[in-house]
Image (tube, rainbow, N blue to C red; front, side, top):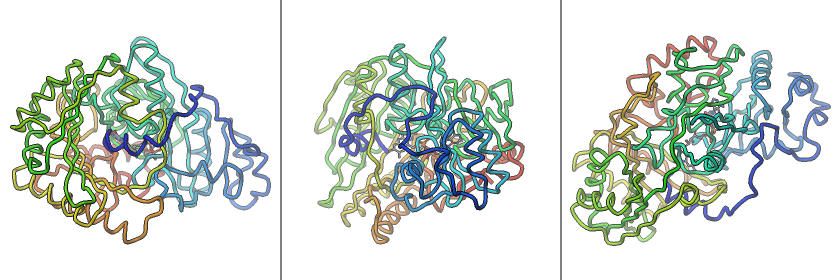
Length: 489
Ligand SMILES: Cc1cc2nc3c(=O)[nH]c(=O)nc-3n(C[C@H](O)[C@H](O)[C@H](O)COP(=O)(O)OP(=O)(O)OC[C@H]3O[C@@H](n4cnc5c(N)ncnc54)[C@H](O)[C@@H]3O)c2cc1C
């Protein structure tokens, strides 16, 4: 989801009280916890499991369960896990994996719960929810963060030290899911992907072994976890991430009329390839309910000079924008502007993606045609194009399984939906996404794993790195303990 979309969607959320950034389990509804497991006699020994851990187990019909099983997208509310364990520390995670194995429960990790396909929940299985493991510390330019921290909290914490991280912008996305699949945002071109900042990780693998993974310790796993996608290779309990300065950002926002749409896409593409790495711009092509397209670019310069970056984009487009606005924002002003505040309300949506190689003129025409077709049927759809290149084109030291270093950018096919859409609404949204894929087929290099979707072959998220990822997965998860329709097989 793009910053502007998010801003529109999330504005309604308002501010929440600051979260306590501790490693302790959250304050839970009265009655939640071991005492509520009385009567859970059949099958797994849930009461014994609860007694063995510091965190909390939630079971169907018991207090807390309806809330802890929710994901960001209400579409997945129908999925009922056999249990959710909100772990308090890495030992709890180990015990959860061992409990799941012993009881033959399919087990999935959950951090921020923003999976596009509901991959962080599982019917009749065990959800290992690490969201209470969100403690943070900072030393020597490195952030140590629990795998359950949310992006807003990470930025608010780092701001105290004059530091930041290249991340996405939705305040409630989990650091774990975002980082393991890549992590794109306004700093991608200047500082690389979130996964490129990993120095080491605490991981519990399928065998229940706790590992401190780095370039020198389990280096093959270190390579695989930097872009291999969440849920594939173990449960990450903590990250050590190399920070960046929390510099002021120069923002620009440019709009063009629909008649200029093809020029803008062509110009944006050139900008993504040739602009200085300090410049970044997110192109939105939105279907409006009157059948027309709205075209705008929201961009930044890490030099603080948004006007210069905008002028460069305009020179590639070949015309001045119809409207232009500029602002200079501090680190937290930028975080709040891009994410719409400290939290975000749940939102129904269906989305997919294509990682883009350079697009020819006919492919650009086809891309615009796909959004126009959605506008004609009044579907609230967008093609949102994020640039890659710059620092994200370089493989970081220690290597990385992120498979799209030479791509121009990523287009996301996004449709907002009701919490519980009808099958006709879902079908219309799916048609838009399929049309989008078809339109850019000559230029697609695969999909972005953080925008994972149904019906796409898993290998296409990883480019040439898939075979090596399969080998690493086989080594660390030989019995296929972590598995669902979206895992590396
Ligand atoms: C509103 C919105 C805005 C977004 N904006 C951006 C953006 O700006 N940039 C961007 O790059 N992406 C963005 N995304 C995509 C986002 O990066 C992915 O959805 C990401 O996987 C979410 O991570 P999560 O922890 O919140 O989700 P979860 O649903 O908790 O997890 C996602 C996946 O990771 C696995 N996982 C979770 N925790 C762990 C763990 N501790 N160890 C191992 N695996 C784990 C889960 O099993 C699941 O497969 C956005 C998504 C949404 C819904």
